[in-house]
Image 1 (tube, rainbow, N blue to C red):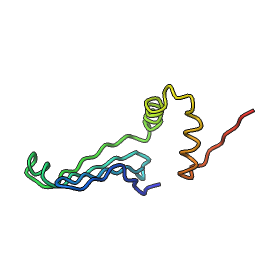
Image 2 (cartoon, one colour; image 1 turned 45 degrees about the vertical axis):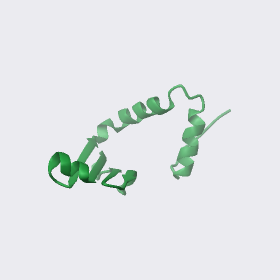
Image 3 (cartoon, rainbow, N blue to C red; image 1 turned 180 degrees about the vertical axis):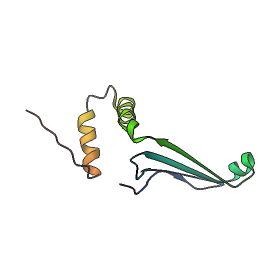
Length: 97
């Protein structure tokens, strides 16, 4: 899965675009670009680019941290995650008895 997903996109006097993707090496790469007035004012250039790389070896820790942050205390977490995975065609197994 090397196709990026758009996390944020905003137009205006300063456009901001932030994407995420998995690199060939398995790292999670978030990249952003600000274009317009704010970068010009602070950096003297109308374009400012930035990256955050989470090594493949740390993606599981990040996943657990995100689950804790966004679903901690939610008694419907399993149902919510199943709905999310189904909406994104992510294979998963669910069992109950």
